[in-house]
Image 1 (spheres, rainbow, N blue to C red):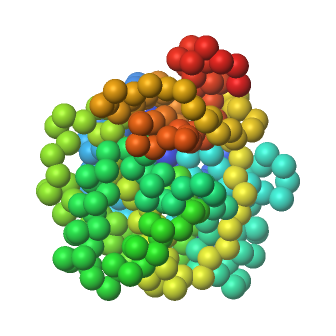
Image 2: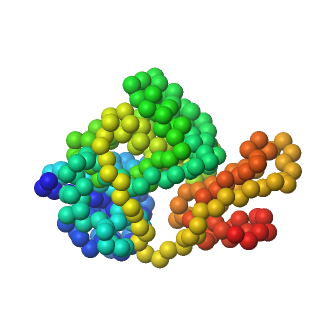
Length: 300
């Protein structure tokens, strides 16, 4: 193993891992996010899809690496506030640790997120618009039929590797990139997102998180899971929680609460008379907690 690059996707200036040999900060959506004095690699240089960042999220960094990052044997992606963890607490994974993990694996992933109550499919459609996910399955059926069984398996699971975080061998990275960008290009041509909210317009980034496990399942990729930690100041609700709402009267309507503000991770809270006895929500931000308290006059 000779050359490792882990790109760190960011949309703003932020403290980065000190090891510049393996960590490469990349400014996503640089066509609009670049400000004078920023020294990060930009995703709008070379062959790029930077202008799709509002819809593709960190995938614009992955695309840039796929098309422009040469002479690299292992490529990864993490986020400016979310990094793979070293054995040393609150330190990013080291080159030595990465090399060790690749002795018996082709891929490094974050530990799975477990939903327990819901499947990956039901969790997605309770948080986002249903149509794009259903259209994604149709595209896989029509153009990538060998992946359909794996897609259905992943949709019926109750856990998934999220965040589009990974480190993988170059050969696998090329194959993975061809897979996700090929599918998403067809989906982009197939659905109309012109009336989507700013949050929902990030649809291709959301869906790509599920496609990672589909690709792994189909190609039987050997992987190792690693913990992750958050860099910088944390605003985290320490426990995950479930809200059960028993006495809501809902007359022929579905109420959707978007609990997000710019810069937060992506969670939504959706409930309807058809989905009781619960809505189910996992939240990680104090801001979300405050909004729930305001909506329901309860304390979490």
